[in-house]
Structure formats: structure tokens, C-alpha cells
Amino acid sequence: MNKITLNLIIGILGIGTLIYSFYGMGETTTLFTFEINIWVYRLIWAVVTVGSFYEHFKKAKQNND
Image 1 (tube, rainbow, N blue to C red):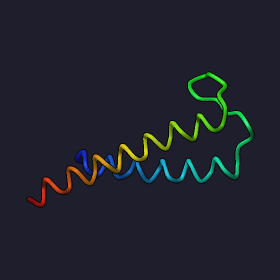
Image 2: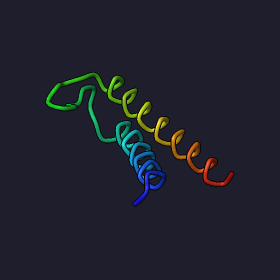
Image 3: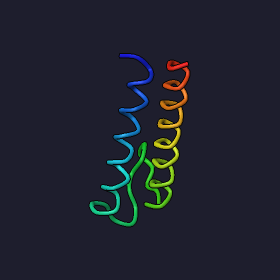
Image 4: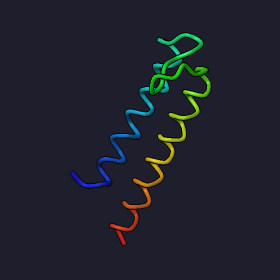
């Protein structure tokens, strides 16, 4: 599996996690054994998701050129 596909999968999982965080979680959640505010958790996943999609489209554009 190449890096382009992996970035796309991580981005899609990130979108799913963000959507689920609005429906299935309380005001705090646990990330790496630390209890954090849900908005910080959403921000972390948003950054991961945007970064993954950015890398995916950047690599896809390089492959098309």
C-alpha cells in the first residue's frame, strides 16, 4: 500500500471520528490516557484530517505531472 492510499484512508477515518465526536461523546474524552476537552480532541482530529488530505492531493498532483 503506497503513501497516497494511506493518507486517504487516514483522512476518511478522521472525518468519521469528527462526525462521531458530535453524536457519541460527552464533554471530555480520553486520548493517550489523558482526559481532554472534546473541542481540543476535535481540533487534533481536524488537523490530522486536513493534513492527510493535503498530503494526498499534493502527492496525487505530483504523480499526474
